[in-house]
Image (cartoon, rainbow, N blue to C red; front, side, top):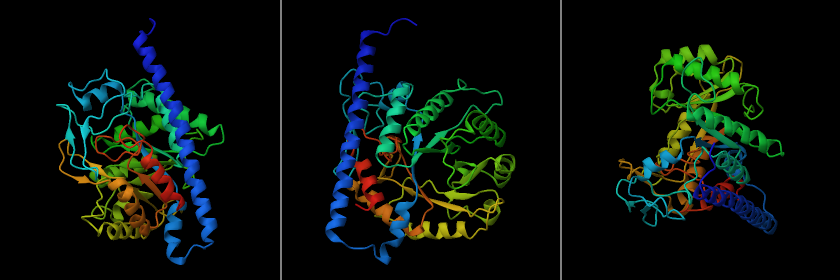
Length: 392
């Protein structure tokens, strides 16, 4: 390969410096959080009350953030548009927001984002993925629920599509941090919602994944010896599609659906080991009943009988800091309110006594559900996640 131009080398150096600084900032800020929590607990000398028991149980449940694999340089350019000043450093915020985190106004024609990475880091850079893993682990997350789909073919390999290549880098990054003694694992969040796939394509992807990484220690096996496979968008698929995939792969995969109270039925439960409703737009301000809805869904899931291997059905609760699709053509916004929304959803959804949490998301920037440290909020939402999970 020809030598990289000077500008590319400079960008790589800046990215490396940014990752080093960010990792140090994460550790320092989380140390402050934990020190403050310990001093508060020591000063109060109070024990946990019975009323706090559900919250304590929820805090003990593992917390995984959905990790999307699509942030290439081209994806940034597609979302930011032709008029964004890409050469400017640090990258300027592409839009303005009201104090509550809603009412976005784009600063550049064609832009659909309200936040950016300071250097528009691409996931085609292995260092970017490794930095995300380190930052998430330092923030106390149990792991990533990696959003992935393969090519759907029987002959696919690592180079079949960009997602396969980035997944391979992620698996290696998680294996590397686990080798240092850090507990950080993976769930699979299958990309089956935005683009519907045939059962054959899904099974082919599952076969490739298991063939390539099935014996790797990076997968969380706390719920089952099988690999946790969250089928995003499962509620959009027919009963026969669920049956076809489950019959072929359930012996190797712990298949968790993405069903809501309108789609979870006894017949569909037959082919699923649990449920995780991907409710990214949950709004605690205009739908106070949302907590009761999720608690009822969780109860229904758990009352659906045991799985073929004798395990109980699990319920993973959603958690998001906010939601905003206005710039991308949507009409809904759940305000962030400087962390209040995250805390309200955590406390309210804890009433469903989840077996695990799915944070929506690490890096879904277009829909505004991300907690990844970017230019606008920095470490604010990772610190908030750590605080609510530890009760500090």
